Length: 83
Image 1 (cartoon, rainbow, N blue to C red):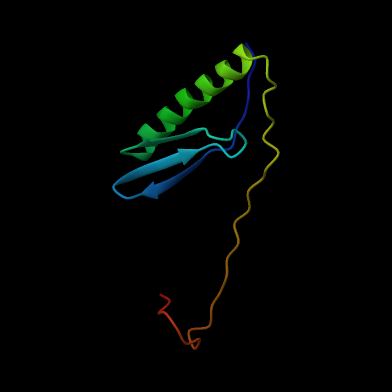
Image 2 (image 1 turned 135 degrees about the horizontal axis):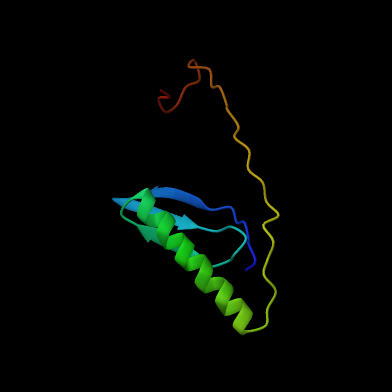
């Protein structure tokens, strides 16, 4: 058994959640909860990888990385209200 690691992103989307895998183009799913979306992402990734294998295509490597950037905005700036 070979193990792969992929970065996944889950975002609030209306009443539910949208999940996707940046290194696997088109690998998207949704769910009513974060937990359901995580489960659906695992199934979507497995299906995606099985399709790649079936078509003798290489499995992409997740070459991305994540950072979190904090931006401070002076409340004196005019325009929309910032909390």
